[in-house]
Amino acid sequence: QVQLAESGGGLVQAGGSLRLSCAASGSIFSINSINAMGWYRQAPGKQREAVAAITRGGSTNYVDSVKGRFTISRDNAKNTVYLQMNSLKPEDTGVYYCKMSRVVGPDYWGQGTQVTVSS
Image (cartoon, helix red, strand yellow):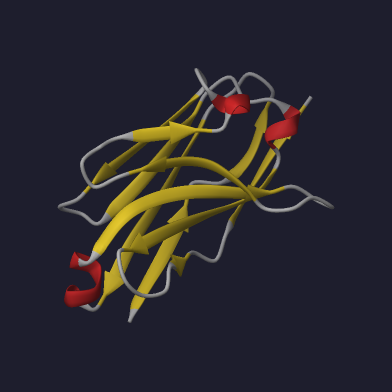
């Protein structure tokens, strides 16, 4: 089994920055089977949406609303994915979840970390 531990959320003023981290621990076999890593967010009263994703090879994808402001990266040696968030806006407020996916088998999810951007 694999556990994901997120950190880095908090309260920040609009225009500020935060860096989220998500580290995987547990079964080495399962961790080594992880391919894509990504971040999702859920604002109050809204559905969870994909924010950014990165493959094992480093290819990235972003939702249009964060392009140019957010950067996803990963450290395969540390089994960790990061989300650098700059120029934050109030509409970025929500609970941010990391997800790690395997080619075969269920995805792993973090417990979520709150990001609040004040205007």
